Length: 361
Ligand SMILES: Cc1ncc(COP(=O)(O)O)c(C=O)c1O
Image (tube, rainbow, N blue to C red; front, side, top):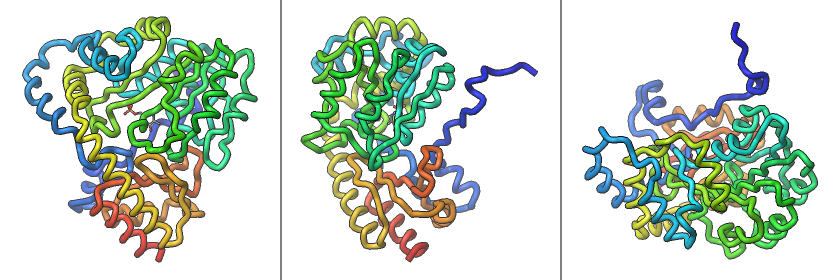
């Protein structure tokens, strides 16, 4: 038997939201709804869709390995230099590239007990030591994270908002934290849901890059831009950090259609606006209905909501599946009594609420 690395033995593979096709194949039904992967229910930016159609005939060619135009446009939009941008096959890959560039088996990485599950996966796959910080009220506890820093700490992962809790850390505490953390530690701020947040206390970490060199902001086109299937995300960091990340990056990691689509999506302010408006009105609808049913949920700043069923959610999850509604149990995130529900179109949310009421009511 050829032995894998010791560190990966306890790793649990990432469990994605159940695809609609899979459920429909299993149950022999049609017209089910997926509220399980925090995707944009309005779909892809129409500008991106038409751009892809025009460029699809060029896929016999390798993509631009430097993603010149896309980097240029992101940089222009964010007021940084092209050399400050690293692109990835989804923001997931950017997180992985950061870990592969900096973490060694002698290092420690800190992340919270209910943080995005990719942090344990990348940390353990490298064989670095995972240092787990308990959340407070399902929110990152920056004081606790700070107290766990040692000489061996190399990376701190923080998702803001966090998946699956939907909670945020706020401006003042984060600014202070970034000042306090030793300069030889990288703080990776994962802002996959950045565009959804409407709160004056929500920090835009691009404003904090002058506090420390070891700050990497990570964002994605998978969520509000509706490009999850094409896989494109990006990181913003100092030129020096980006130059190291680029050494580890696979040469053609962002495919040509993804580059084209993301470039066009950046021009589609209308789609972003409509997506935000739908999300906030439907979030209110879900909050009202869940309160009406008498279920407890965590206030969410993003496009999904975490419901505490106060018991193993498997039975309710399965009953919802039977009614054609796919949600997400989050036991893998250490939340054994919760269900995460993405905000969908009104009809989809209503179908979820009506089904849930029949099951628990
Ligand atoms: C907090 C967070 N970060 C990163 C990702 C990865 O997204 P992607 O690789 O599609 O950009 C996700 C996906 O759900 C997420 O929830």
